[in-house]
Image (cartoon, rainbow, N blue to C red; front, side, top):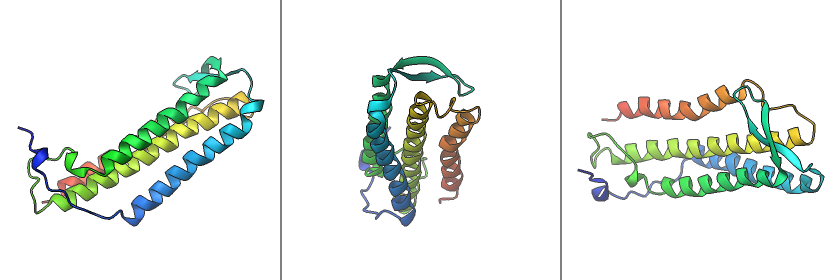
Length: 168
């Protein structure tokens, strides 16, 4: 039976690393949006709409499609920011109790903070690269983009699982 509604609410201030990750993520998000707005008038009508696994453009679409990535990024940012504020809602192992709640909450919140900002960095990099391809400055994302993005998203989860096992 789910006991998450019985979990204690603990006010844990953001750590320096969480603040740094937020600054990086938010600045990159805002910077790419400003760049996007500044080049909108010179973008061609057809821009990359999709990339294959090798990072090559395999579909072209309207430049209006480029608006979707910042919208998805903003939605993710807001949703994950909200979940960061409620670590008592996160999933924990059965050994969770009041004496280790603070350690579990902090670890889970930090992992979610890193994931949120990595997702923003990856999505906005795709957005930025699509703009650059449309402007003729790049050919595609490159063959290493997908594996690198995959590793960047999975690594914090793996690290969190390892650290979580050490909490007694």
